[in-house]
Length: 323
Image (spheres, helix red, strand yellow):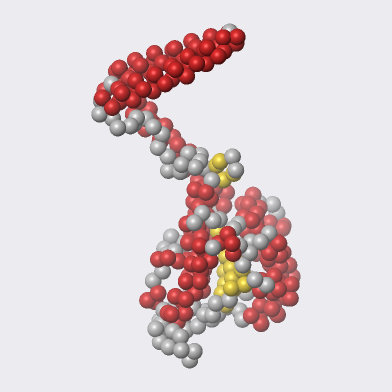
């Protein structure tokens, strides 16, 4: 599914949510008037009197103060009588009161400051599930099961399991202090199938749950998008490029598996440099060693990545085989 399609479906879901609530209110009004005709009469009378006073205010501005006082008094009396009628009929509240899932944007998806937190979370989650093949099965950091990791002691005296628990604890602190730690990169480097991607995506879900916009991309997939975008314009690739550069947290998985060449090196440095300048955090997961990264991508890229970087150690048996 393309990014444009994800966004269209998300906006459609928000619209459907609002439409369903409007239908619920409409039905609640019909039921209320059928069970409580006096309420319909009161509200009809209030609407008529309110309009008459407003018309008088429009036609005779000089009588403004007096009419405004009457409007205030009319509303106070109406609300009091309305509440008394509802309570006498056994209602603890007006069933027509709007019910929303998000009290911030009222289920609009946007506020005057831009995209609401609720929509940002949902968009990030849907993009993650679309881009990561195990997205819907992935657990968040706080729900990880560490029993899959080996409890056998290595030469260092540590076990794979205790090491992963320690890394997860560090990442949990990062989530809690995310705004203060923005700009800190992460490099998950190690052999194949030692839980790097699983841990990175668990972190992604934890951050998404806190309302941060997280984008997950594999290096080959991202560079294919950027290469395609450089040859022909695509709204989807343009939107993804913007989100990759601007998102709160970027996960770039499988670095080193992309097609090598000048284009890849140039684009990856540009991405790291732009996010470094903007103070945005990036997590890179790779099977390459530190030296290999340095040699392949050069001093500039390596310096930007490593200047402020969390470097956990991954070791232990191949998780596909079992420990």
